[in-house]
Length: 111
Image (cartoon, rainbow, N blue to C red):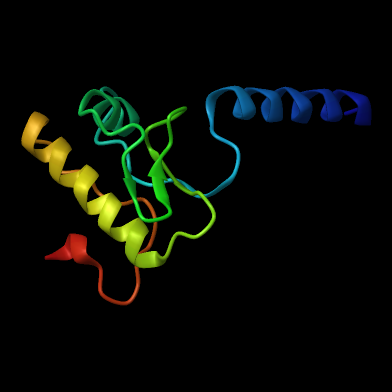
C-alpha cells in the first residue's frame, strides 16, 4: 500500500474522532455499551448527566460517556461522578452500566 493512502486513511480516522469525541484529558469511554442500542453514551445523555461535575471531573458535554478532567480532578472526583452517573442510569432505565476502565484496587462497582 502506498504511504499516501495510509496517511489519508489515518487522517480521516483522526478527523472523525475529533468530531465525535471530546478533546482533553479523559480515560476514553468510561462505561461499556450494554448492547447494540442504546449505547452507554445515549443512556447517560438521556439521564441528564451531560455537564454534571464533581470537583474537577465533568461528564463531557460533547459525548456523555467521557468523564473529563478539567484540570484538577482527583481519582475520588472521577469515581464519585461515575457512581452518580451509574445511579442515574440505573434509576431511569434499570440498566446496570459496567465500567470499561479498570478501577484498582477497590472497585466500587463490584459491590
